[in-house]
Length: 342
Image (cartoon, rainbow, N blue to C red; front, side, top):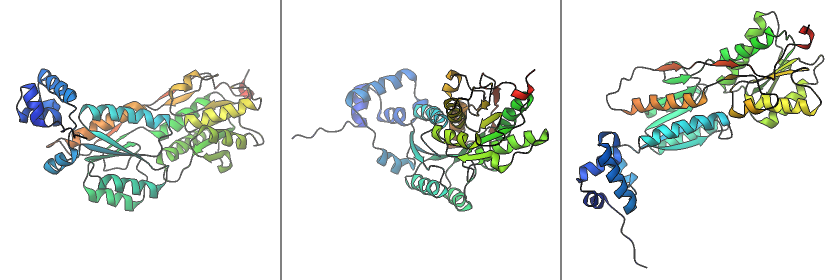
């Protein structure tokens, strides 16, 4: 069987009427090429079936045009929305994402980051700042630009939100409605600074009103709908049972509300339910879910833009810390506490 020769830069240059240098620049640094020239070169490259040799380019430039992203899980509407924006921005600048998931396990994350570093990624993105010091030492030693998302450690670039405030906002909303008996379903707290901050915010809001959140009022669960149902089952056994249940992630709150409704609880007349995140389908439930909007898409977009700036030669390397605003979204899953109704 006759072999087919791969298209080369010289072929594209000949067909497009451009120099080899211009073709190379168009394929590696498209921002430096005039739009009409870029379109012509890309059209010829597509027609010829040109595929760049990344190994050769990496040897020549010392760059692989890849970005490593480590997230806790791919089974999350929050992280998938953020990843979509990261992918969109980096693809527009000629980068390919390498994505790793560690399932909230510190050892798995360290192994995943080690693999990404060994693949020669040009930049790294991680979620949160809670990880063992050995992992931080590895990240510092590799010398690769790093951006943290959602939460972050001081001294390192980060795009975050105030997760403590998110907990306070949702708790204050329910306190203002007269609720005094609370249950909380949260994600696993070990090595998860986002969940810890949200629970701490809820606790602080309650303490400010003279209400104690006991450990027995908190159900620590994996961040899934099914786990939200399990957490709700536990909280409904409390005597007296809560009049308000907060999920520190919408998935937990939605699972809890489904479980309660299946047991004959009327929402929100019997028990109010609220979450944090504002996932897309939260507005389309019956009743629609009260929550705090965490701008996941913008976190991804801003973090990607920050890392792109770091990858530019001569860019200012001063630490950047951007905190995005969050807002309470009051819907129909919360109401006045039964004892507070007139």
